[in-house]
Length: 499
Image 1 (spheres, rainbow, N blue to C red):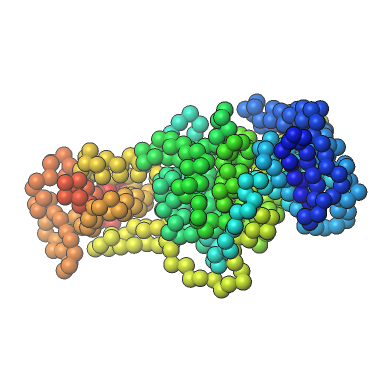
Image 2 (image 1 turned 180 degrees about the horizontal axis):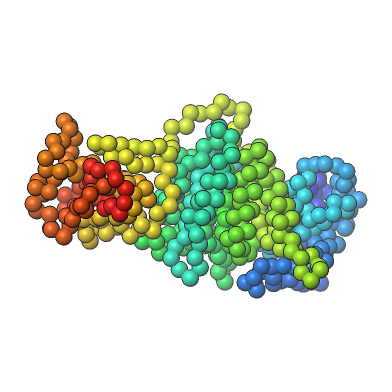
């Protein structure tokens, strides 16, 4: 393992170590070198400020990598592994100054390799905050490997198609070994739900997809959603304290802009500094399409048994190759491949304790449930329809209105949405009963709940308007009695039907 350790001055120095032993003389970071490093950081960031695909001439990309190589690698060039050595090798960047982490180390090309080190499956590039030194990482939980996803898409100026994110994650994880548990997606996009799921089900990997930012004071934020779908931006220290401190989570994947931008309390580096073993983030703003392609590749490689660092390297290589564009007879590179950044406490942090026998998992799974009297829905694994829930559940719970009618063609998911809504109301203290709406002449089955028009004279006329051919259910909720009633019609015909 090669380690480049940045020591705060004065004088500022960078020291190489190989397997913990000093390697060559210290590199003194004088004013000229520090100015050159600032120029490299600025030059790397410029293509991402254009709000377009950051297509760059490969020679310019190599020039940035070569500048870093000349300052730091050339003094120890004779000690670098041979190009014929297949590895794996680890390049570990340790620093207390976030500026060192924001250098594009992934662009360095080592002699004889002919590709950026960040895309080389023989190498792993890790950033290690000095604040993480001395943190005791407990052993990982036994398997099965548990993955938890949360996509946050609050209403605002920068839209995110969270249902597309969830769909891609479903496709990316469907090939995982059957010993891997993909937990039902967090459905509200809120930090409270995330904290609850992490505490209850102890996932090994938590994937947060959404929007992140580092403000002018160097504080990193992730934009969660409140229950009304509005932004609920939380700083890194609150996320660490509320969700991850003392948790069993081994890896956090931050699929959000600027989450890999190191700062005073940047998201990725701060989470590692508070005890999360491995965190993956992005170094600048990135388009949803390429971040989705990267994450799809990352989970595909993770599914085949690769470690997190190796899966990151292979996913970088995949978007590096797919991001090449021909322009006027010349090939340009999409520089986004250099944005995924991996922070870690220790290069050897395993996700799962494979020496221990797997523990039976009895947590939430995608399965149908009967609410009563053959009213079917989904108890777990509910994906999508978040905006519908945000519009329906708060006013039902708070008593803004007490009767709800869902309409739509058959098969579009009204029963599933109503099932999930009533489950959320149950969590808020409501009693939930499945009630079957029947014709006056139909006798209810023994033990079942039923209701007909003649038995509900107190309902306002405008709230009781069955179609000529009743087909689907509708539901009511009363805040005074705190009762939720999902009611299905008896006919099975399809068509525009109430729920």
